[in-house]
Image (cartoon, rainbow, N blue to C red):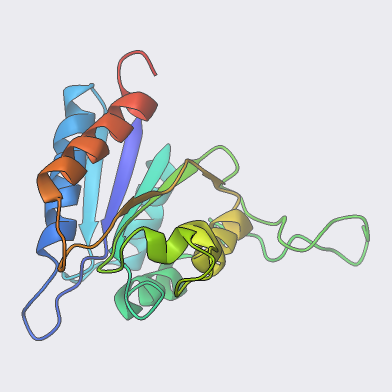
Length: 193
């Protein structure tokens, strides 16, 4: 399979992004071990829109590695979406036409044979997402990131289960998290997947 990994572990004032970079490196190494082709776009570096469109068109699976920033993705990933996803090669509008009122909004994406993975890192503990009495009111990662998922759906992509690393500053378990990430990638993309 062909993979595009988008590293949105962006630096601020020259700092940060190291955990996302390590997650991307582990994903790249693991996927290549299973014989897959992998290209990486690092949003800390300049990119060419036409090249990104080509990478997406050639990919079977897109992996978005991002920290949770202010309850969403970093602005650099949102800018990437704004720059790249508007390409007429990726999406033909919202899907509706005046001649066919049966077509539904959000059905115009051309990437219907592709899938994506959302992998995120958070300072928030897991229970902040799962416990209805805590900050995210039990809505979970996918509930919180519904706009991101709807953007992917608008393009025609289908989701693999999301992956999340929690409590990375207050109670980090990075070695165990790396093992979980490697196990996730093996389960979905390994030799017997």
